[in-house]
Amino acid sequence: MTSNDFKYMMQDLYRVYFGVQCTYREILENEDAYYKFKAVCRQYLVTEVDPDTTLESHLYYLTPDQPAAQTYRQLGARVKVNVPTVRKGLFGKEQKVFAEELWTIEDLMAISAHSKQFRGIVLSELQIPKIKLREFAV
Image 1 (cartoon, rainbow, N blue to C red):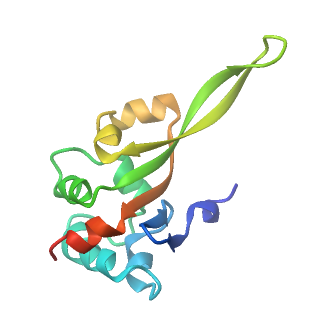
Image 2: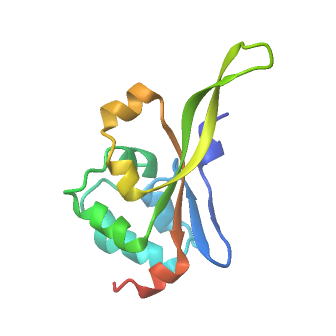
């Protein structure tokens, strides 16, 4: 896998999806990115971090006392996370695999950045419901 594997912006009928390797600057400059999220980024998220910060590093080190945490909470954001687990094979041999899970921002912030690194947790995608974006006052 390369770093471009997690650098994308998509949307379907219900949600907007961002690969965590996208920077806030790339989101703001991309004309295909969802307009309301760009407005939220401009007004609430980029004010406290550098625009060249990736979503991954911002979300990984996000703490509950930061204003961005409240913004992501109100947006109902969820993060797709890959958690290393051990699976036993057919003959009892243990094998390390990554289980994909969908966490809320609260779940993500409940674990410190040091614990995430120690456990080997990898972020892969940010998901935001469109209905929450529409309700969000900018």
